[in-house]
Image 1 (cartoon, rainbow, N blue to C red):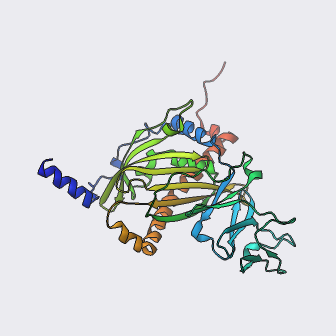
Image 2 (image 1 turned 45 degrees about the horizontal axis):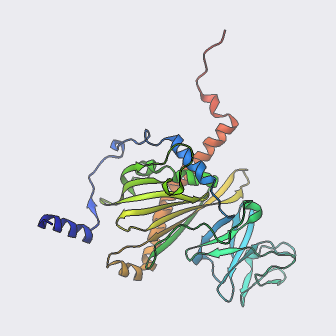
Image 3 (image 1 turned 120 degrees about the horizontal axis):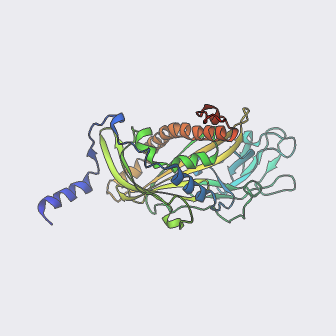
Length: 351
């Protein structure tokens, strides 16, 4: 290897950033020609046909401790807590006695005590209160709701592969007026990244996308994207793949570049309907980062300082992307109700 190439390779390993040129937002290369609705719709349809085992993400594992934690999944009010053995418990949030909200209860010696009349629930099923299957994967917690899901149940959620060994994990959660399919559809459109989130992404190019229709093997059903993560005027170029292992999950995995193997999991959980009659859904995004750089060990020691910044970045992205997902829901509702046809040009007059 020539000395210059050795130096360039060495610097690249030591310094993953590169200085980005100043390009006005409006001067980016348009991506609307590549962002084919047919490709997105076909990928989304295949995703929605995959089994979920009736599992729904509740929230971050770290959010559920020895105090009641409330969740709403498809209109079902749930209460979760950890018992004396630190294992997860979950069941209806409605007290079987007079209907009190058990999320306002207290944990004593691993049991949940209703604040109204002191009814004690250990987390085991009883004739008037049913314990629900739950799963803690170390980053997220899940609940299985067979009556709502309506599929053949599985013993565990459909989990994507995650980085092994040392890693940093942060979970962000936001709720919007849309359905889970709108949240997943947002992620099925990687072409919008640099336009809609110019503060985070630049020089985005979709290297390959799945076919418009027909059967596509799941291992080939992916979007492969070259993108540069922006940190001010500095950028970190990577190649990432977008896949959907089950109907309410989309995974972005870095396959080349800084942090190879790191994943961003986007999970969509239906909450039910608001007083306006419109659906609500919660997006739970888990960022799980790894790096082979020696300095990553120091980053792990500083995790209490770093993970809030990771959550803040995810919140900023999803404040924008929920507007995208909510707009998708509005457009779909307009199409269903025939509202959009009122604005279409009239056809040719007939004799």
